[in-house]
Image (cartoon, rainbow, N blue to C red; front, side, top):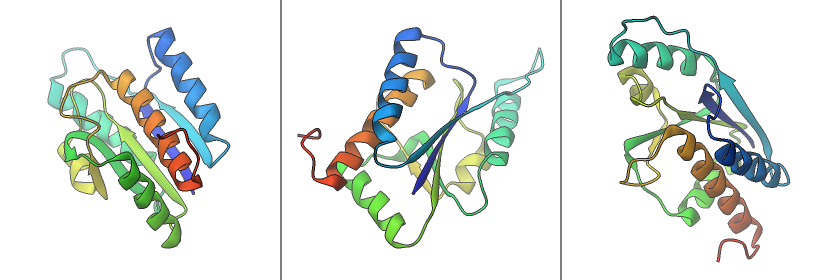
Length: 155
C-alpha cells in the first residue's frame, strides 16, 4: 500500500524535520511513502475560515481519486497503535492501493475536508503543532508496520 502524507508547507523546526526524515527512511523499508509538501497562497486580511477553506481545497485536490482519506483532526477517533496496524492490514486486504493522510494548518480543517474524510483520526486529546503532528503520525505509522511484521520496536 502506498502512503502519502499531505503537508501544508515545510516543517519549520530542524529537529522535527530530522525526526521526520528518520521515520520516513524507516517506513520506506515496509511501504511506498511520499511526503507531499503543498503550497497555499494566502491573501493578507483573510479570516481563519477563509484560510481553512483554501487549505482544504489544496489538500483535497492532491488526493488521488481512489485513495483512503485519513484526516487528522482533534474531533477524530483515537485508536491504539495495534488498531492502526489492523486498519492498514484491512485496507490492504480490501485491495486499497493508497492512503492519503491530511494534516491541516494551525487553524484546523475546513468543513469540506472533514465531510470528505473516510476516517477522522485524532493523535491525542492534547493539542500539538501541525509540525509535531507530522512527526508523531510518521512514528505511529512506523510502529504499525513493525506490529504488522511481528517485530519488537512496538513493545
